[in-house]
Length: 250
Image (spheres, rainbow, N blue to C red):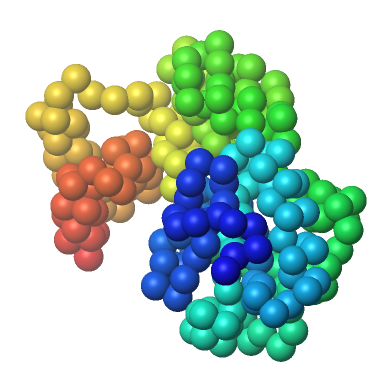
């Protein structure tokens, strides 16, 4: 019997009883969306019965920002083996499929609250997520004011600046975040002045024209590569024209 009385999969209170069969979906995959605290317990464990209600109370107060997975180690040997359980209670926090924090033993409420607080997104982070979901210019500018070094904010903000003709400003803010495929795409937009083409035919015609001049001309070759960056890796034409570029060069 679970000392919390929680039954079955997630029941709307951000808590679940998790088994060997459900762990992958209910914890590992779920942690890619929201942090999950894993409470390893057993019916015979007195400290577990003290800690369990504290975990449930504190995590419930996050209103879904953190979730709790309760695992009876006696009934779920595969999970117990995976965590190399030697003593309980044992508590692990998982984000993005990785363990990010842990503790052993029955901590008090203040200590548990501090542990959970490190996992829950701040009010500022939640507001940025909300603004990004809206996605219009005003929302992106507001998000950028809150988190000017967040790549998820900087890239769409830079793209708007490029579209408005402020390429230098876009380059400045992009220089503050790590290079990614999306960053390179917007940087390529800045260099080419391209934010898109009216049709696929127009795009391919431009690439075909450049292809005739790429060999021995570094400037043309860079423009061709920049156009591929603007197209992005998900565009099926990108790999096709990369192959054509390799053939033309070599």
